[in-house]
Length: 222
Length: 356
Image 1 (tube, chains in turn red, brown):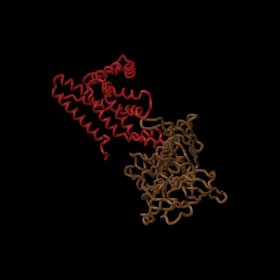
Image 2 (tube, chains in turn cyan, brown):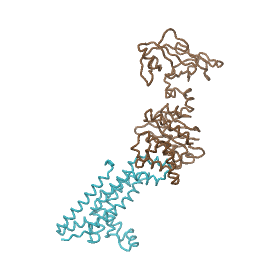
Image 3 (tube, rainbow over the protein chains, first blue to last red):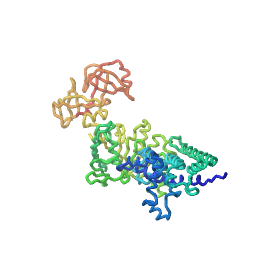
Image 4 (cartoon, one colour):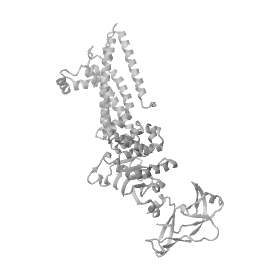
């Protein structure tokens, strides 16, 4: 039978987009957590890790309340784009973000904090602005661990099920990601479709993890 | 001109006692050395000048510019201070080649001029052939030259060096001194360096400050300090290990002489300003200033009979330990000929006797 590959492409698109957003946001938040002193810093750190431990349904519920059509954010989004946010593939990106962002913040903060502070000091004494220090000294030094974390975050977002189904739903051809599609196929007794998709997604995940390992900082650099 | 008057209190931590940094440094000399044991607050002083550490109170000035003032809350960011800092671990950016490291420091210049200036400095510090290498492919001495070159390229108004000779072998040390003399001759940048190496103070310093326990205990030119250490503690830190109780017997300002009684023996020295007859004083003599020879006959002028306890080898000399904790250095060959002699004679220098 013919397999509809839309869920795989959608999943890849959603995961890629959420990873890009997570890297950008993650760098910014991790920079603040690593270098800035502010009150409630450790509370903020705990807060950003919360999605890693909460049940997906709890997260999905929060997001539904937060982004639903009656919520301020949902209304704002609808006013700007003309359509609701929930039960679209964009909502799936947000769902995936909750898996990728905590991972990236955690690893980026650790990577930033492991950079020898002498480099930044030296750059400061040479008159370099904080932005130049970040872009030319710190960031290149943490590039590999961040890329490794991004790869893992990508793989993690690829497989999200619970949050996606809560806020993006299961609309074939529109919001049905691969994890949801596999669930559907099993439910409907489409053993062959389920098997194929499971094998494909496993292979993709394995490939990404292998790439992430190659990027890991403890690898000897060539 | 560098002026740094600063106070900073560090409360007692889990594994550290309370520490109070309270130093005042004012110098207009080309090379100023902060000398002292580890934990005296030398590096902390450099860090405060560079802007990495904020003092509780005080004032830091570089020529006419105020870098820090506790009373008015002025605290310039390190970028605005233009203090070149050569770190102990050099802090070269590991992901950049040597040339890129230097260009990073010269980025405020237009491209062509930057290129020319970097080439010039590479040449001067004999780094041209290495310019494509990364820091991890360089030796310690090369890294250090690169680090000094990088700091100078940013056109600092003062060059701060943290323990530059630490961990260098004697050959590299001599090379470093050459490099710094070159810097001194070619750049108009005053140098403030931290060291706990006495040799370095003499090799490079125009002026030195001795720090112990977060305070300046003495300042002056190296030879001034060496001739007149301010206290027994300073004397000890300068390697003047023989400190002996003596009594002033006579003082003759006219002939610039004095006599001191040391145990049963009389020594002649220079006139001692500010001392009176009968004063108990400390006599400070470096082991290499005393002439030691096997005793034969009665003690002569400025001589003291002593008994040898043991001898320890030193580079180029033998250090003899006598009863009463007296030390004297003699040449290896002189000792080798008199290995079994226990009774020795010490002759004190009459013109350079130091008294506290």
